[in-house]
Structure formats: C-alpha cells, structure tokens
Image (cartoon, rainbow, N blue to C red; front, side, top):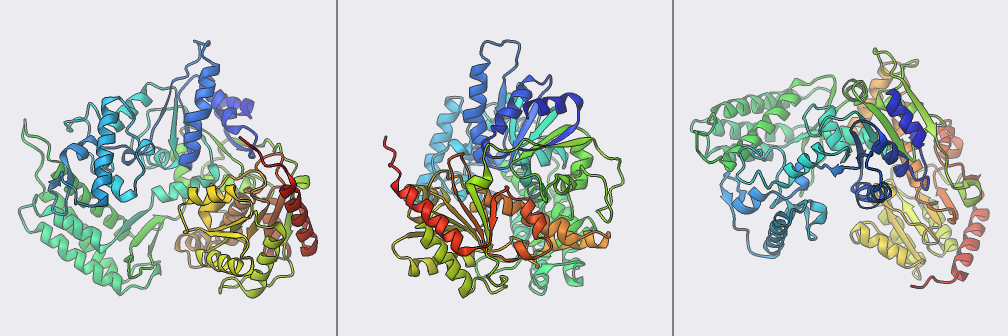
Length: 635
C-alpha cells in the first residue's frame, strides 16, 4: 500500500485503497506522505482517528526518523474555528439576543463549568497550548458555545485585540510551516469545494475513512432555516440599524412561520406558493437589513464584536434564504418533522456531490481514498462513481468530462474470515415490515444471545427497534446485563460492554461505525435488517429518483450502495484481531433471497455462510464455553 500511495502521488494518479482492520493503513500512507516532495493533507471523518494519528502514529514515525535531517517531519492539526477556545469571547463576553456583550454568566451549574473553561483557556494561552476543545475539561455543547465562536462570529485576526494570541490563528500559522497537515472531511470540503480558504496550499490529499466522505461533504453543504433564526437576526439588528429594516425582517420571520406551519413535512419538489413568497420576503428583508448596517468603524475605533456578530447572523439568513428561494435543480429542499420540543426546520442540500468533488478537488489535486470498505459488490466502481471518478456507464448519472486517471487496490486483510467468522442469514424469518420487530425476530434474537451467553452487539435500523429488542432480552434473559444506546454516553456503554462478557449492547448508527471491541467481549453481531435508507428520506429519495430519471437504476446506485456500506461497516465490528471468532447474524432473509442480495453479500468480508439456526447456536455455545474457560488476564 505504501508503494502504491507513493506511486500515485508521484504520477498524479488518483488511488482507491481498500485496507482492512489490522493492515496498518495509517502508516502505509503516512510514510509516503512524509517522503513526498510537497505538502500533503490527511483528512479523517472522525476525531478518534485524528487523535490516533496525531497522538500515536505520527509521533512514532517522527521518532523513527529523528536521525534523518533530509526528511521534513513537521506536522500540524487543523480544525474548524469552533473547535478552539476564543479569547475575545472569554475576556469580552458573549452577545445576548440584543447583540450586547455579556461577560457575566447566569448562576448555577453551567456558570461553574463556563468559569472552569475560561480558566483552562487562560492557562492554555499562557503556556502556548493549543486551546483545542479535545483538551478541555469535560463539558456539554452548550457550555462550549460560551467560550468559542464560529467563523461567522469571528472578528478576524487583524481586528481582534487578541489576534496575536488566537488559538485558531496559531494553528493556521503552524499549518503554514508544516509539511503534513491533519484535518477533517468537513474542513477539506469547505476549503476545496466551497472555495473558502481554510487549508494552506497543498499538492496531494489522503482521505481516510473515505466511505464517509460523500455524507460529510453533503453535511458541510447543507443549510437549515427556521422562523426563530430570522427572528434572532432581526432582534440582534435592532441596536445597529436605525431605520425600519430590522422590523421588516421580524415581519418576514412571522410570514415564514405561518407558511411553514401550513406546509406538510417532507421533500418539497417545488415550494408551495406561500412558502416561496415567504422565502423571497426573508431574502429581500435580510438584504435591506444588511445594507442598513454601518459601513465600518471610524479610524481608531475599537471593533464592535456585537455589531460584527449581529451582521454575520443576518448575512447567514440572507444567504440561506437566497439559496432556498432560488429552487435550483441542483438542490433538494425539505421541511423536517417537528415535535413539541423541536420545531420543524427548512433544509436544503445538494442533489449530488460527485460533480463538485470532481471539478474542484479531483481535477486540482492528487487524491488517495482509503477505508476498510471501498469495494462494494466485489468492485470499486460503485464508490468511485459517488466520488466523481468513474466514467459514465449505461444509464448512469451523466458525466460529460473525460475520465480522470485512477486505480483501485485491495491490499487484503490479515484475517482468515472463513475460519474466524460465520455469516448467518436467518432465511426462515419473515421479511421485516414497517412495524418494527415482530415476535419471530425477538425470539431469534433471544435464542442467539442465550447461546452466546451475552457477548453480543445488536445493530438496529431504528432506536425504536433497539429499545424493543433490549426490553425483550431483559425480560427473557434477566441473568445477562442488557444495555441500550441512550442508557449512558457511548464511551461509558462501551466500557461496561468490555468489562463484563455477559453483557449485550443494542444501538443504532453510531454503534455501527464507532465501536472497536476486540476479543471475547463480542462474539455475536446482530443486524436486524438490511439498512436501506428510509423511503421518506428526502435527500436519498431525490437522489434515487434523479438516477432513475437519467435512465439508471436508482435503487442499486443509491439505496443498495448505501446499505452495502453500512452492512460492511456493521459486520466489521466482529473481527478486530487474528484471535477473534464469532458470528454475524442478519435477521433479514432478503440478503439470501432477493436478487440484490448477491451485491450486498459480495460487499461483506468473505465469512463462512450458513442459514442453519441450530448450527449457529451450537457454534455460539462452543465459543462461549471456550471463552469462559480461558484464564482471565491479570495486571
């Protein structure tokens, strides 16, 4: 893999590398990245992998190369501005709803935590620390917002009185001096695709956890708007705008609220007339309000942070309303489902991201994509197509540009999946319906977990299904500890799961991709159904329809590809070392009976297949007794 990455960077040819758990793929791309003549960016989807690279893998490499003065081992981490503490907000205060800076925080538990975060940030400033959120005392999102700003709220280094000490600016300056920059998918997307300069110029980029890239790029390009957002912008403008423009913006917020209440939730192929009119009203009122703001401070005046942040709020409302009102074919607009606690919001996202990725990233830079799951249905084609690399095939989304040079490489796995793992498809069960888990599925879950004596991770398509399964197992197998997502924070649940082998952990998507539990702790991975997107998912359904409209197979290209990636990630939770053994049980007979089942199965590790429930229960019982007889490690 290291040789292939080096060759790709040298020849400027894009590379897709499937590298399973245990292959050492981070070292395989870090070594050629450090040896490359120009700057390289490494982008990850998760903070956990970013932390592993920066705290473990890169320092080991730097240490190994300490006697090689000819190799530039300088490196830096770059995150979004809100991941760093803001000294202006800490020392000057947080704007209230009227845009006035408030240095005092309300009394109570939150005040104690905010004061603790302020003290920590001051210590970081004094000791030349990074001021990164990851290094801060434990806190909630709400508490962190009291000591940080988004890029919109930032005064800018030249205007801020604390610009010389700014943590975010220091991180950017360090990145400017570094050969290797570690960042995340979202920041890469904002820099390369949206054209907002966030990362110093670079020659090549390695995208790890590349199976997540399309979702992260989509997320970075998604905007949301509610009547409350518009109202807040109007309120904050009252102090800074002398005319009626702020009141006009508040009136537009009322019109938007009424229109949203009259609009049913779901995808809006064309916005209803009242909603379209309300969006135009918000757009025009926000534009007028922006024009009414003072044109800048007089010479020598201190920058007004309240004004800057109030104006930034209006600017954001204008940009989102303008995008929504345009009703572009390249965007999908929908109204989210609201509740008593969470009001509905208007959302807009790009119909596809392969075009922008191709035009603004792949044609400009050499890109290495890597993940444990890049081959779907036995080949790289489906994933390459979503990334903008693959040439048009019959009925595929139209691609007019010439084919970009790329190659795919599967470096294999150190695991012998046919000997270490069984893929059990419960063919005898009924096809899952929309009403959640039925009695037959609950019986099957309980029987498999009983045979395994715990040691099971249940991955479910919905929170409701996970909770129903957890409740059933608690009643039928009270001697086991059954945990469900939501009972505690994910790290705490994972720690409990690892500590006691007679434990079952049930959850949804975040467990599919965020859990690493090697050893006897996990000998059974349960998957309740093929994880197709919901039929009413506004974005996925729009993408599927667009492919159908172009003459392709939208179900296979969108829904089946999405399901294959998630299935592969879920199945990947089982075998984490060469000593692991176990069963992946899929309680959806369609994996064996439907015509698309072969595509999905070919996307999974090559486990030994069976549909015999008695054989699987015996295998689980044998594994359980072997694990129970093994000596407990000490120390």
